[in-house]
Image (tube, helix red, strand yellow):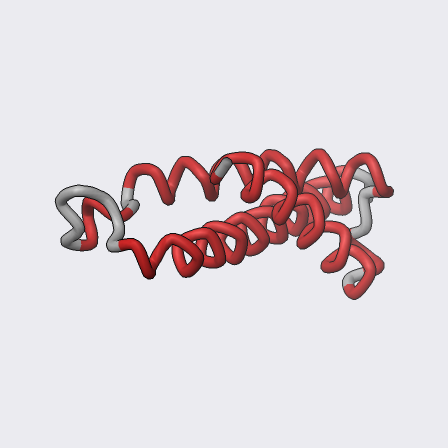
Length: 96
């Protein structure tokens, strides 16, 4: 479930950022693919540094699941934007 949230959030974040940063726009498919890759990286980061590393020995307490899912979505979105920006910068540099 967390992976799916990260992938979707990454794609959404990359497309929103591409709308704001027109010079880095990769097109709908390119933005979405870069966002999905970034979202996957965000999910991986969260699995490595997830709840067990924040002092929750048996997972998160019952009231924190929604907070962790929101955090997963935010991290996926941010990582999706970062990957899209990096790919856009490389593409712009190579087309000069």
